[in-house]
Image (cartoon, rainbow, N blue to C red; front, side, top):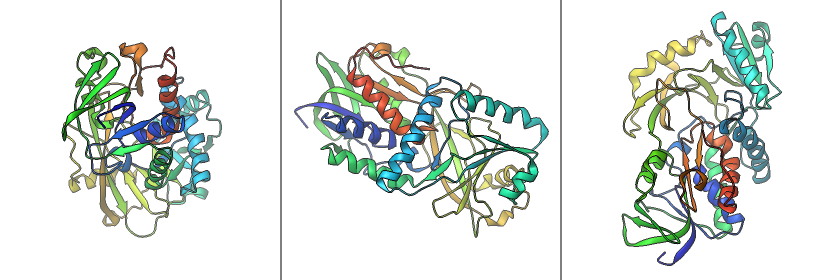
Length: 375
C-alpha cells in the first residue's frame, strides 16, 4: 500500500461497500479502509432492515430521489443475487383524528416523489389486513419490504472482491493531507502513508470527523454531527402481524414501529435518544415508553412479551429541534478539492438508497464537471 492508489473508500458499511463495488465494476482500482475487524459493524447492521418506498421525504430531495431509484435497483439486485427479501407491504396508521392531516401529507409527498401505489384504508379495511391493529385511518404501501441486510452486505463485498477491489480491515485513518496529485492518508497502525488520487469518505458515524482531519479542508463544509440512538425490543412468540406497521412519524425518527425479519418475527423500534457518544448499551428502563407507544395501534400488547433486542445509532446532520436534514453528497464543485467525495448524514433510507448513492458517487468521480445536488 506504499504505491499510489487510484481510489480509496473510507468505511466498509453498506454505503462504502456499494460505492466501492460500483467504482470497481467500472474498472477503477479500489481499496476500502475499514477501522473495524470486519465490515458493517455499526449503522449498517443495527437498523430495521426495511426497504422503504420513498414516502416521507420532500420532493426533489436526495432522500426522495435516491430512495425511489434505490428501491427499484435493490429489489432487482436481490432477485439476481438470490438475497432473501420480502415485499411485506406497510401500514402507516393514524391513531386518532388529529393525525389524519399527516396521512394526507404523506399521500401528497409520495405522489410528488413518484410513489403512486399508496392506498387509503378505513378501519374496516385495516381489520381485514391486520386484525391486531387499531386506528382511525391508514395508508397501505405495497412496495415496502424487508431485506436480509447481512446477506446483502456479503453480496456487495463479493462483487467488490470479484472486481479486484480490496478491503483492508483494522485501518483507522488518523490524518489526511491534500497533495498536488491526490491525498496522503496516515493510518494509526502504519508509519507509511497511503497515497491515492480519488478519496471517498463513506465513514458513516465518523464521516464529519474524517473530513475535519483533512488538512486545509474548508471547515465551513464540515457539518455538525449528531447521534440518534434507537432501541429495538423483540416480540417473543408468534407475531400477529403480516405487514410492517408504522405510526405517524415524529421526534427525529419514524416512530416506534413494527418491523418483521425475513422469518416473520416481529420487533418494535427504534425510539430516539439523542446521545453524545457511540454506545450500544441497551437501556431496559425504556420499556414502559415502548409499551405506551405500541398500544396506540396494538392495544392488546402483553408487556411481558417484549424482550430487549439491540440498539443502533443514526448519523445525523440535524439536531433534535431542527428540521430533518437531507443526505449530503459533497463533491469538488462544493468544497473545491479535486477527487474528494464526502457522504454525510446517510441515515434512513440509506440502506434502500445504497445502490443509487453508489451511482451518484460514481458519476461525480468520473465527471469533473458533474454538479452534485447538496442539501
